[in-house]
Image 1 (tube, rainbow, N blue to C red):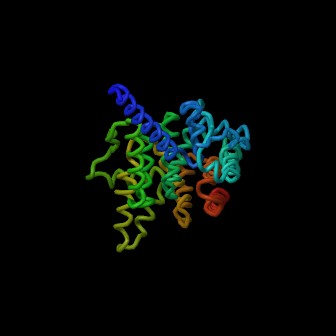
Image 2 (image 1 turned 30 degrees about the vertical axis):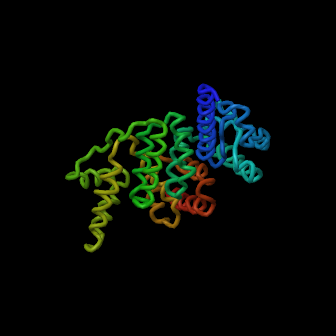
Image 3 (image 1 turned 135 degrees about the vertical axis):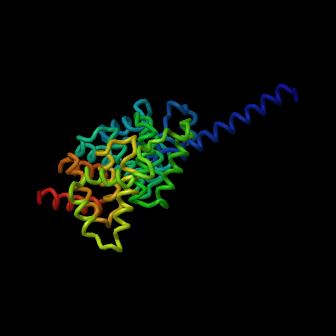
Length: 312
């Protein structure tokens, strides 16, 4: 065989191998909905992966539009395996999450909604969906610093065991997107004064209740109160990248997504009210998160909101 023919054959084999790997990686990186762009892959690739345009024919117009807004306005909503195996379930879910839920929480802008969903997914441990929503966040202009700060802010509430997984997942997506790491440092306080600054931050959110609580705490537990001031608030709340008001709203999201922490949820509902959130805005946040945290945790959060806002 002619040497040039052999070389061309080898090159064709390599290109075909790369093409198949690209298709495989694209499917793995698709969301729980499996969204991929038929336009970008080409008609033959779409056929190869059993993409069928009518898989999403049961989507409402609003659901389809919201999905395009989040995952890319120029993408055709062809999809992969889940729509092939569980199409009825997926269309019901998508219509609920991206039509009905959006309609009843319309006062949230898209960036705020995505960031709160990221926080919720971290708290519930939804790493696969987090990666997909993270790409949507970047595509919708949310800064890498803000995203990293969401993960960091979760740590004192969910623990390092869980947050480490999401730091690594975030780094993985950032590297795939050619986002240089490390990002600019956002720490604003020194180790020596973090407790003092953290306590001041607590006071700005909770008022005099913090000093009353510290004064009434038994001696054997005072170190925990010091930890809260220095570590939870000093190490995290004082950082740049996110506004303090939004950090407190994120904390509400972390807690209602965890479930089983009703007393802390109530404390941070009050903190959010003190920071200027309204009953309506908190209800909108819970509404937006129902698809991600389920009804029991959502209903518990709404009961806590009722208790605090009706009391006031």
